[in-house]
Amino acid sequence: MKWIVTGGTGLVGKKLVRAIDRDGDEIVIFSRHAAQHSGHVRTVVWDPEKIGNWSKEIEGADVVVHLTGEPIADGRWTDERLAKIRSSRTESTKLLAEAIVAAKDKPTVFVSASAVGYYGHEQGDAKLAETSAPGTDVIAQICTDWESAATPAEAVTRVVHPRIGVVLSPDGGMLKTVLPAFRAFVGGPIGDGKQWVSFVHIDDAIRAILFAVEHEKVSGAFNLTAPNPITMNAFAEALAKVIHRPNLFRVPSFAARLALGKMADVALTGQRVVPQKLLDFGFSFNFPVVEAALQELLVHP
Image 1 (cartoon, rainbow, N blue to C red):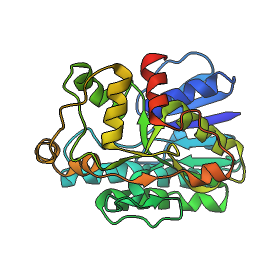
Image 2 (image 1 turned 90 degrees about the horizontal axis):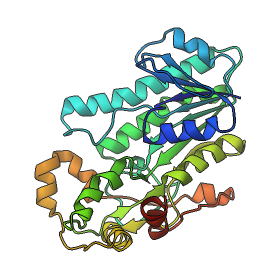
Image 3 (image 1 turned 180 degrees about the vertical axis):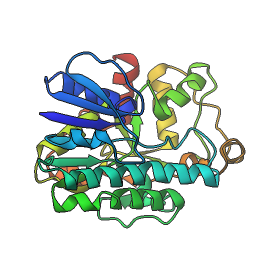
Image 4 (image 1 turned 30 degrees about the vertical axis):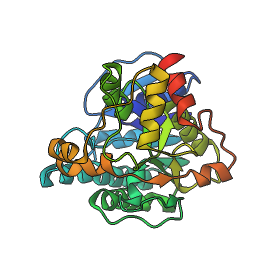
């Protein structure tokens, strides 16, 4: 098989590429910068804002996995930054969809990432499955547009949108951010701690993406989160227990807002997302509860 992967150097992409490479498949990473790889991996330089020679690689590819996007948590949410977050997702997705439509030998599946931010940050304690309505805040609107940008490809191939939750890995994301404070004995929950954290162990995230590729009946959006979302209070308690540290120093909401501005909405609110579609299709999570996930990642890696 031939795979195209964008975002192949990111947290999820890097692990996905390693998993595919073990099977001996051909992997082409679309990247802004040239790079050398071992195994069956090579890089093709692409500009995710305009069509180019990279589009020729779509011809004959079996799978396209699109994970590229400006990181949401790398800076304050100015209007300019939000515009970049939106365009980096929607424009690149639109270009890939157009390249798939134009290809004579088309991929059999287009995995175009999304996020649980689709549901917005005003849903409270409601359990959110794939049939739940989208939110109305700015991130929800970006996610809606992000998914819609892939629509042209639906006429010629199977399109799936993993709505990715909080990916747990010591190499990046929320876990890497909060670990130093906990290890320094000053960790604790953010805000009132009642907000939901829809987490997924990174290995389960990779397995779920591969599951969606392999199972032809999986199409459209599916929630890529563990089946047991928890509150921020419960997450902090579990992390403290696993690494044998106290859970005493709560980060007040006002401090988070001063430090992060509008971006604090992500940390101070959340979504209670359940992976109903994956469960209905028979996918089994290796780490359905947070303490087991943290144990595997931090104690028995």
